[in-house]
Length: 291
Image 1: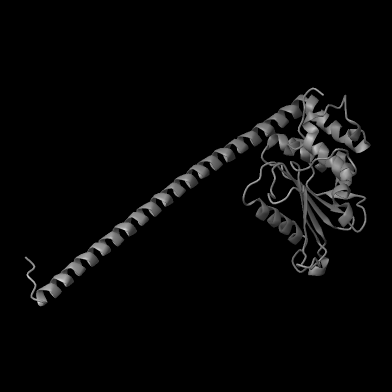
Image 2: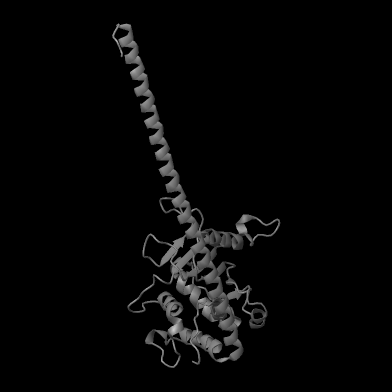
């Protein structure tokens, strides 16, 4: 390959799983990720927002995830998110709810609703409380009983994923997305020699060797770098503001403590003066000569 290509860059990601020529890869990917939660394997899908090279080249900001529907009318959303941020979980849930709710048109009944599966591949770790790379969120109560079996959200944190050897197709896809930028189709490791992985590499080769596609890839990569830089700078500003705010709070607390200490000292002084006056009065009443 002429250039190394990162499959996590969103235009490449969408070309891999959202183009008509790679529809079989999307089916394979969905079955690999969702195998244990599907009533039956997916055999075919309709891509609702297929990757269009010309549209992408004309508008580099329009790249979004993949949306698809299978032969049972069940819905699928696949997204790549390289940087995490505080409100990402809310965005994930909102996007799932939006796709789920769009199934019903005016006058339709809720019994027509079909399961909706949202799959998010994350470059940053979102869940800081454990080392599991896969988290599945569905509608269950505290005892694990489902309210409704209508899909859910699958989060896959690539940074946490590590495998000494590839044991299944889910791991194969995750390893590909995690390490794909280091791969060269001339010297592929054993775990990349399946028909699906070779087809995936052919998509990377297209971005690597076709000048127009590689320039588009570079432009998208630069845009993402700029966004990451701006986000980093914003985080630095917010951190500085937080530190200044904490310093001001500490000063306020110190001043408050000084004011309280001064107030206490003044009260003690007033008490002492009052006691002196009281004793003077007692002595005066007793006829003692205070001079």
